[in-house]
Length: 200
Image 1 (cartoon, rainbow, N blue to C red):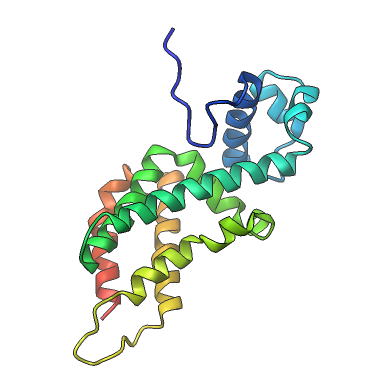
Image 2 (image 1 turned 180 degrees about the horizontal axis):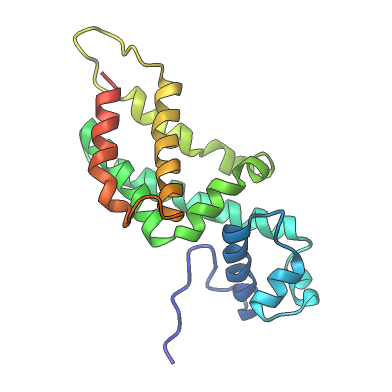
């Protein structure tokens, strides 16, 4: 039997029960949302009992927050590394968008979970996670944009960052519910072109 590769929200030293609990929780949180998922649901999906869950996590909230923090850190790290791996502003925008969309294809449940649960879990997340927001990463791209002949950009950096991140988030949601056909990376050039036109 071939072992499944570990998703990035599971540590290699996590015991088998914890691994299955994390997998089950992410699947259910992504499909149903935090409020509609109970500890009993996670126990049933994972094949472990409620006491087994409480051995690893004090509560459903603690489990959700651990998943949120670990998933967010990995997504931020991959997108940040993509930006750093290339030179030139246009290439950096393309790398950022490309990495985000690749993550949507590779980990659709993770990306849906992060998007849908951010309002509840972001304020509770670790200080490290809050310092490494996706909107700040998008903003870093905006402020690095080359200046046009008109001097400073006429687009507010915060608004432009929100436009980029909002577009990526909504595109992921449209793919998730089947409004747009996948894969997500198919839409890469469209998003990059839109964003490059947005920033004069």
